[in-house]
Image (cartoon, rainbow, N blue to C red; front, side):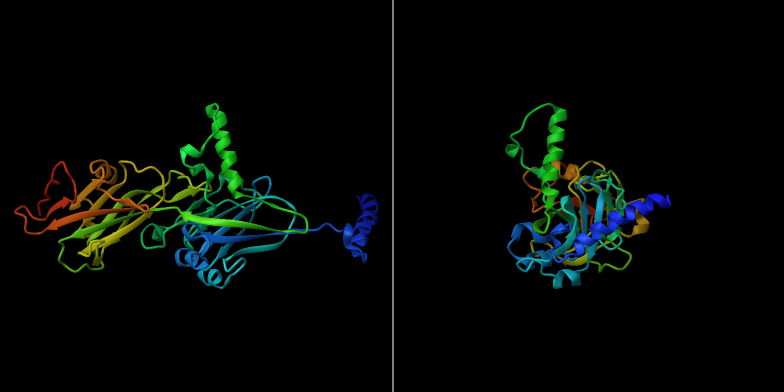
Length: 340
């Protein structure tokens, strides 16, 4: 072993000596990348990004799609950062030349958990678990870059077998994450953040009592809390509840309301909305119904605008059997009253 080391040492010294000459042309040159963050609806306005995205988790993968670097950005850092035309971002000046991929998550919370490890975890195996407060009281979730897998169908001009189509979709998707670092050059890569969530606002009209720390409560069941790095659901779900707040609805009527955020995975019958006097009343809610059925039963009446679904619950405390609850625009029948 010592003999081999003695043979190799002069070779190492020759290489180092080559880089120590006045002419550094023999030295390997690193490259760099500037990832600049934009907000897709207003990509030219840096303040539009800062107004909507307040924290960022950024991940870079190498040519083998293994996790290579990661960094968290606080709101203060994003406000202070300006890497390109006023946009915040991540500038790296010392990267080996080669192929890379980048993914960013916005507003996923300090308590989010990344399942993966540097130099070990492949892109396809990485996932992020969203903490409870993000689905209720936190900022809405954003994601970058815009996945090409979400292109409208009419833009997909390729054809082939199912297997080929699936592979093409995966390859197309990776194109948008891709950037190349060239020797001695600084690559510029835009990271356009898109909305990665739906918002469900539940408004309760006619409830005159002032809400307390214990209720009333709105609960939503079966909301996704874990996503892969293509922004697809990993099939991990939780139930969330919120004490309502008091304020006007979109029509200016005073109401109690609660807001929930969840991803673009399919809306199924498992997503149930429950209205309760308090969390201790979860076994006997004042009302519960399927969000999917509510949408299906009200074609053209339920407004789904900008990924926002508004649900209205009418509360009548003077009904003969106790509190009587109906749902706005439900065309088939009133909801069965809940005796007190």
